[in-house]
Image (tube, rainbow, N blue to C red; front, side, top):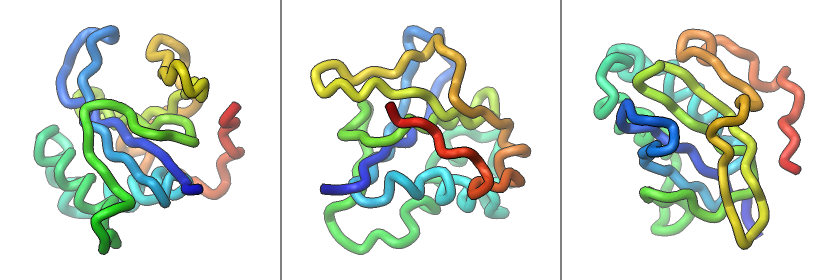
Length: 140
């Protein structure tokens, strides 16, 4: 059991089929990732580094992980890990947050990068959106 989720931090301006991400994996907090990311992006530290992708990525990861206190529960990788929710993508070059449909077939995990995102916001819009008022994103 768990509440698994992933946030991908797009690290380079690259072609869509060659996306490069640093992935933050949560074993227990997948359903909280959007809220944690929003809180992280609202911080003064993140706001002051919106134009500096490496620093912004580090700041956001640090802030999302504010309450980790054990060796398990969170991971960082270059690929998507076990997952139970739509994928959250932070594109530091475009200054956008995307929520993308995830293929939950255990034999072929995949994100259709070319499909229209389920949700998308600029950084500025994302920090003001009432996430609790959003209609639940369908995980099927």
